[in-house]
Structures are given as structure tokens and as C-alpha cells.
Image 1 (cartoon, rainbow, N blue to C red):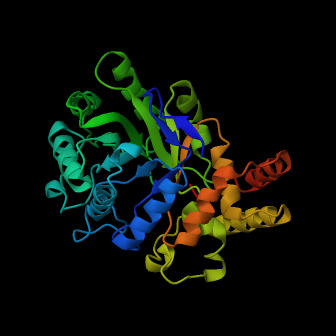
Image 2 (spheres, rainbow, N blue to C red; image 1 turned 60 degrees about the vertical axis):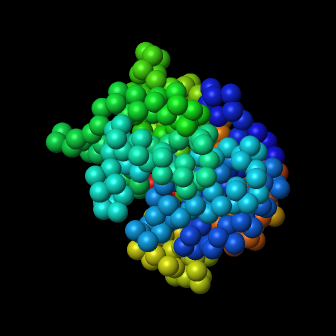
Length: 345
């Protein structure tokens, strides 16, 4: 397993990160333990979670994923071997989380970290991330930004001051953003350089063969400012396996359980998936492994987050860490990308 710098923090994380958002709904605690045991044995030291997990989120399961990870670390006694990343919920309609008025202000950030630490059964988290922006912007499947002059937001200064409190107190080692845009990253970076608090070390955004929008919005900022990408959905939420093509609905799969999730199931997304599957087959490759290996080859990539509901899926995804794509495959990927540029933003 390759280990890469987490921004300018001095921390090194595995190029594959274990995603855990299925623990507590699609996966039981026992299954989560099996996944975490395997990942650690394969050299993965980097686990990602969030206070709102598992997905699909509900009042009944809120925080359950962190609890399962905490129970596993307590049972194994291995906290010192791990880099644990979690996230604080941004503004949105979650009435069961701090009264439904979550913001990135001091009150909510301080309250959120305390509950996460309790569930994780640890004194600190290594990477604390803002799950999505505290403002109206183009996240979660939107390419175009449409400005809303009446939308409120928490001042960046207050957010960074609150995060600085946590770093100073030793409850957080370093900080990052998620589902963010260049403007947000640069605002936080400028404040940090002006002495207002710690520097963001990472950005967790979607990136896959079906969604390469990061390359136009964020790649230069990521490289020049050392805010590396933690790519979520590098296999397009399993769509690149082809299991959803032609109306496929495998038992227990995410888009079978929640069919309103159409992000990777539009006509252009399915056409692109077929093209990438054909390319992989022509070169004797597994499409999902090809997808992950492509992500890992990008200059702005710190780690690709692999999640799974079944062990064979996890084993297959992690194995991509040992795969290097040759120039012919990479050229084929670019040819497909020219035809299906942003099929699933």
C-alpha cells in the first residue's frame, strides 16, 4: 500500500481510504468489523466516517456508524494505528441533529465534536471535515452555480476560529472540507495564512470516470495549495460495475433500496458506463478496478474512498491499489471522456 501526505499536516494516509457509511443500515456491526479487519490487514490506515452516517440517514440510526467504528477500535485496541476522519453536519433538514438548526458556528462545531468523540471512544480525531458548505452553492450533482443573494451563511472567520479551538484543545489534529468549491477553499486558506487558524489539508468531493468535474473546478487549487482530494464514489457508487444497466436492481444494492437516487443512472451515464466496461474488457481489466486506478493516478489525489456492502466488493476495490494503467488504457479513457464529458455531475 502506498502512503501519501495529507496536505501539509505531516500525516501520511493510505492511498485507499475505507469508507464506512453503510455500517448500521446496509451492514451490521459484525460485517463492519470484518471489513475493518481486512482493510487494516491490507495496509489501509485511513478510515472515513461522519456524524450523520449511516446512509440513508434517519433519527433512529444517527451516529451509528461512528459507534460501530468506536466499538471496533475498543475491541481491537488499535487506535494508534489509524487515521480517523469524520465530519460535522452542515445546514439542512435534520430535525434530530441539534434541533435541526445546524451551522458551522462555534456552538454546533463544539457540540458535534464532543458527540463524535464519545461515539468513536477516542480522545481525538485525526481529520475533522466540514461535510458541505454553510452557504447556498452548487453541490451534490449541480454543475452550474446560481447565486442567491438572500441566502445566509456563517462567517468563515467564526468557523475557522471554532475549528482552531478544537486543534488547540487536542481534540482534532487537522481539518478539511467536503463538497466544497474553489472559492470556499481559498477563503479558508487565506484566513489560515493570515493567522486565523489551522490550514485545510484536504477536500472530499466526488470524482470518478463518470464525474471528472473536479478537474475544472478544483484541480489547480488542490495542487498549488496542497489541499489534496479524498475522492468519494470513485466507482460511481457501484454503477461502473454495470450492475444497474438495463434496469438492474440487485438485491440489497444502494440504488435498489433507494431508487430515487438517479445520479449515475441517466442515459448518458449508462452509455458512458458501457463504453468504460468495453474498454476494460478489451484490456483484460475489471472496470471498477480500472476506475479506482485511474483516480489514484491523478496528481491532485490523496486517497480514494472505497466503500462496500459485501466483502468481495471491498476486496476487489482495494486490489486496485496494485494496478497501474498503461498509456493505451489511459488514452482510451480520454477518448471516452471526450464523448461523455460530464455524464453524472
